Image 1: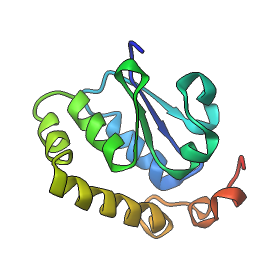
Image 2: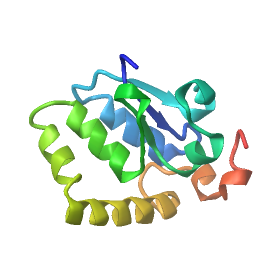
Image 3: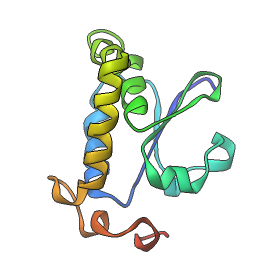
Length: 127
């Protein structure tokens, strides 16, 4: 794959606002809501796309959750590649994964969330 792709939940206000921040980075990637993406062509299941943010990078390798965020930062180049590299280190990677899971589970309580964020995945718009 020539251009990496960031896949996110377009029905979640917190996710959408986070992506709007990512668009301000020097990122050379496509950013697509999973609801509008050709998931099969990207090698992603709908179940996985509902579960976490995804980064489809070189050789169509798929990374999810905190690993996807780290890959996004690494792809932006210096100075953004520094936090991306740090998030990939073993100890910080575990902490980042824990933090990502906590944020994902509590995203309806965070700034920018919408009522759709609080719904179980199978009850969200587009389910």
